[in-house]
Image (cartoon, rainbow, N blue to C red; front, side, top):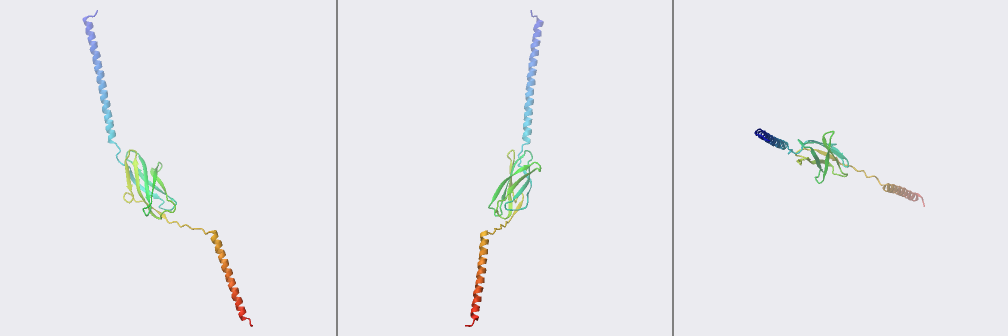
Length: 205
C-alpha cells in the first residue's frame, strides 16, 4: 500500500530523473556548440593561409655558354613557392633570327634544390646568340607566373658556326691523276715533236 511518503519519494525520484535528463541535454548542446566553434575556427585559420601567390624565380643561368650545333646546353633555375609546392617549370629558347622557338621542360633536382633542363641544339642550326625567351611555372594550387627574358632575366648562349669539311671523292682523285698523266704525256710528245723538227731543219740536203 502506497502512503503519502511513498508518493513524495516517487515525485522526488521523477524530478531527479528529469533534472538529469535536462543536464545531459544541456551538456550535449554545449558539446555541439564547442565542436561547431572549433570547426569554424579551423576553417577560418585555413582560409587565412590560402596560397594565392605564384612561384617566384630567384635566379637562372645556363652552362656551357657556347656550343656547336648538335650539342646540348643545360638551364638551371631557382624557383620556389611560399606555401604549396612548385609543380612545373618550362622554358623556350629562341634563335638569333627569331624564326625558331624550341620549348623544353625542367625537372626538380632534390640534391641541388634547383630546376634543371637540357636543350639539344639541332644540327645545322643558326649560329649566333640564342636567348631564353621565358620561364613559365606553376604551383599545385593553380597559381602561375610567366617570367620574360630581357625583362625579368637575361640569359643567353652562343651557337658557334660549324665548318664541315667535305672529303675528297676517290673518283675525283683518280680523274685528277689521269689528267696529270695525260698532261705529262702530251708535254713529252710535244717536246719530242719539236726536237725532231729541229733535227730535220739542221740536216743538209
